[in-house]
Length: 326
Image 1 (cartoon, rainbow, N blue to C red):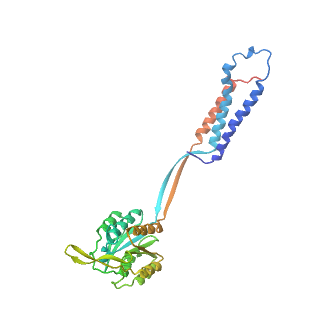
Image 2: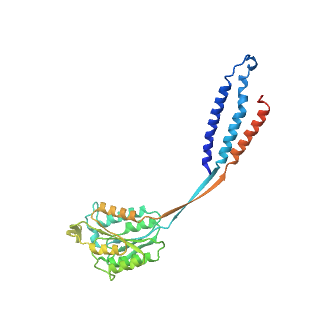
Image 3: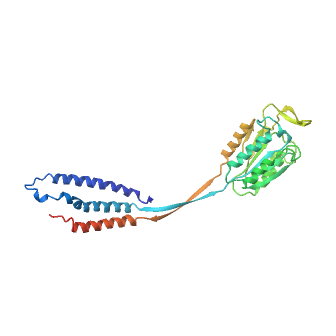
């Protein structure tokens, strides 16, 4: 229950004040001396009858004060409107992503798990996945089917595409997917551990085209600083690893991000990669609008009727059982 005019409820504080003033007046009258009290014998037994009209008047006034406050019963219905953000995750699948400098696994496995956590943290955004190496391939078009997205991320593996790193092609493919995506906010998250060495599209040119479509790019350089154990071939017992210098074209990734109003991040281990995705998650918040509809039913009739009933009883009792004699 709520009240349309709750300030009127403050008038209820006047009722105790009225009773207090009345009690003081009666106390002064009770001090009057009488020569013979025998006529007053038996009056105390019927004292409650004398007080009944005043009590009913208090009930009447209190009920009307509550009615004046406008009591109402209502229910609310919430409607959530979310425009959402369109996001494309670009994941590098070149052979260097098998480097084992990201405990407890290699770069690609940690990147997949972190991307899965990122997808699970979104609730109303449209997300797509582009895998790239020497070429770029759309694994999942932009969708809100998070189950399909999670399955596609789990299935990513090095060797699906010809080896290499075509950053410009990846950006162009993702921008094509986002070009006609609904909503005002469009984002590419590009994760790579190398240098652009394949493809026919220059990454900076692709970034400028994406910026023209209102697409923002966050680039993530994945790899420790210095050297890392990188697979160099197939041995008898599996992949053969060799410590090689980690080469990430940070100036290029920084330029690509800045050209679109995004940011470049460097992740040197699994924990820092998780923090990078958390930071992007914080920067790209979905705007959710909640519209609340309220319907009220006026409930003033009950206290109003109660007040009228109390007033009527007071009039009847005052004229019959509790007649005042001058």
